[in-house]
Length: 259
Image (tube, rainbow, N blue to C red; front, side, top):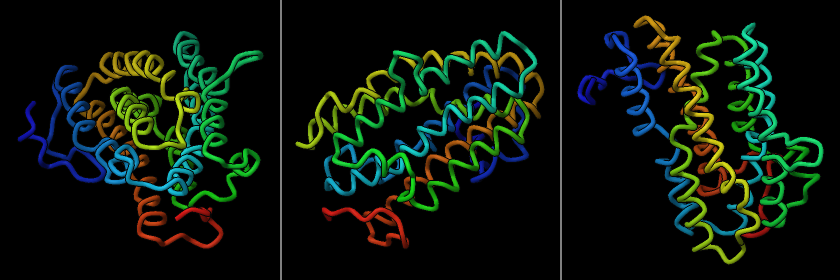
């Protein structure tokens, strides 16, 4: 499978003419999707990591992204509910603990709130999600709905954006620390932790889909699930770009004090 043969991809699918005949072709196609569609390529991320945003714009990003982060364990609980297989449920369960934490241990949601607090946002306001963009809410809820309504295989496949997350986290840590005097290492702890969590999670999911997608039709479903998830991530940045870079903030959404 080479890039030239993947030109029939659309915004929805890999296209009807692509027939993936092996697990190796499946993995190659998944990696191509990540290389061409992951939200690391979005112009908003280029601005964020390059120090081109002001504090209010960074606040808007962190506020909106909180809704996604805080919904991940809900999504993962939905995924677990799809499986009769105990081993899969046990493997997937740690994802919920990674984000929710446990008694006496900090999770990813708490670490994200350290970020928003460090950026000067009121925690109660962040947790209320009252100020997030409508597109953020719609995209995140669509992700949960997808994992509930599609096949268990597609639910797992939709998580495969984690294959590409570590490079993005490294770029984010170095770029934001280098360019923003209002960012310090303590408030970036979420991303540091995900440098080890994401590869572990992605490795299991990749092995799972390669083993369980045994027909060209199932392999196409896996690829289309990843395309869907890249769209979920991309559209959130589209909304941030439109509202906070181009200046079209919808009624009732967060309005930064610093422009």
